[in-house]
Image 1: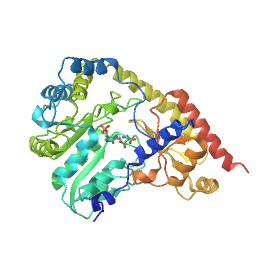
Image 2: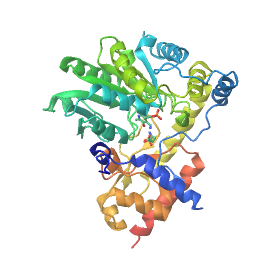
Image 3: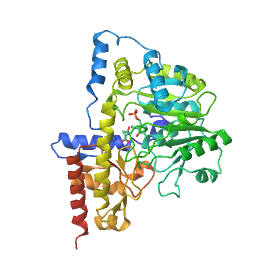
Image 4: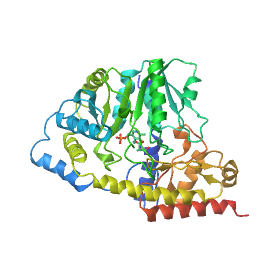
Length: 397
Ligand code: PMP
Ligand code: GLU
């Protein structure tokens, strides 16, 4: 019988990557599309990092398998980086390097979840959590927090009646850009310890915080050994290395061993040249990270104001990190445009205004659009102009 698995039939394609693909296809057809659809920095990977990969290839270091969990030198670089940034004492036994942070998350769901296990996260949440949990047979509870910043709180967690196996917290958050305070992270860790629940802290945007906001890593608050706290991070966002596919998990050696067992049957190891690039990213000079961070900060400040000037479109709480705005679109405005939801709206905006913005539906929050401001200021200005004109067309009497 020629059928596909129920597993793959149950999931939908990544809406961010679909939108990226659509925008690129239109660009290839000669249409001038502004692609604010996918979350990736617009900067080239810093040269010292690319050069390290080229040197590794030329020195014939990249031909053979590495340990499934990554090169010892990369794990050591991660350990040193973490100990400098967070004064956290971890060892290489607490590190598993994966083909992007996305694979870390995928493998963690496979390691931690049995069919029917409950996972909690705050909506809106990053698109891949939803499908990765499904693929592991888990049941997702999307908390619609009462807090205006849409963060997960202890009072939200206390209201959940089901037995929870795992909580996922993403700070800074994709797509809202909110940053959890030290106290908020501490509260969630305390709650998870009391209830014997795993916590994944997705810290992929941890170095991208703005206007004086302070990022707190779980590593500043709790040890990893014998703990149910798991950190996911990587080089994609802070070092502008999305295409290199290097991420990692930091967790107790027990969790890491279980992950490595699985990785040995999945990837064997992350690409070696990319691992050498990641070593240089972590050990080399860090000025480029700060320069990119400052550029994102300026773009946030200008784009946040500009978006809020469009009638019927608003971001209520200013983001403090990552590189997304998640504006809500008023019901009245949707009606005037002639759409019944934000999926239809995002399609219409792509077709008519040539701006790619994924809809909130993919993030568990209909009524919103996501805008990635990881683009140069001129492009962002042009995008805002196009959006303003698009909505004006439907609102003028
Ligand atoms: N977590 C979040 C919240 C993200 O936005 C991304 C970006 N795709 C990832 C994890 C995965 O990052 P990557 O696989 O590029 O390391
Ligand atoms: N994290 C990015 C985003 O949310 C990259 C795309 C993806 O992996 O989904 O757009």
